[in-house]
Image 1 (cartoon, rainbow, N blue to C red):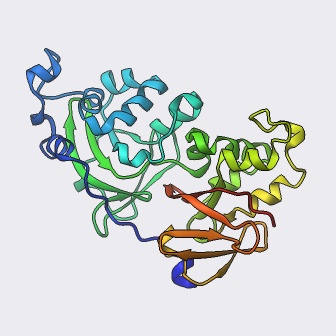
Image 2: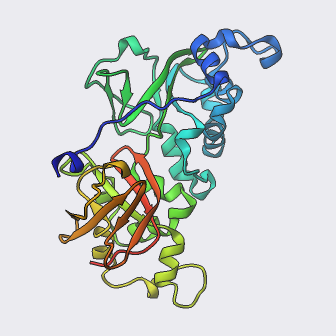
Image 3: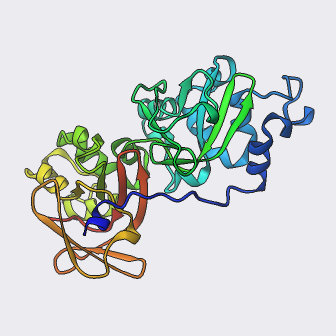
Length: 310
């Protein structure tokens, strides 16, 4: 049970693609006059760098929606931890909340140039959004729960480090993920955002987030396609806390025998895995994990297809 409840180990992901590898490994040398016109082609700005690398298309869209392209073009110097498109799975929609996407992008940008050689284990750096990022250098460089897969790409206004995961907390991730927006709405209305943003007692939380479809099926009594205030159950705070564990585990860490795990609400949920399939409360709601392992700064989200009831 201890290994299950505290499984925090991360593995670097492969497969960024030859184009990204070439651009990041060689830095500005990968750019040509044809690529960037007359704007100092041998040393692109961070904004140009993000626009040129095809695997940064999701990041570029987030930067544009946040209105920060000009900042990354003209100001600096900055250090940017740049997530690839794979890090945005499941996809976010930056237009869902401009304030939140602005804060998320700023959470990836540090004022000043910091190369990988200047980073030390346990060091913290402060991004533009405020909350510190924690650096690890034990087995490769990590920032919060993300791994740096390629480091030290030079730009004319700073440094870019490629990472394999978004630097975002659970509430902001749910707010920007189209299939979790109703869950995020209920969290805010139940005044639980602070609890779900926190690291918890065991270095993070596991959140079973019902998808929009499952929440509408449970609470959209008039079939309007949304949950109105009078449709939110009076015990919504307890129900939501029943979906949160004060420990972090990925889907592969779930035992193959039924195991009870305490929730923030106080009672237990039962989890079990069969191959890659994870089920919660198999004898009651029989909820299945349909969107596994959405890793966030303070833990992991698993999308599920039913609402759990304490």
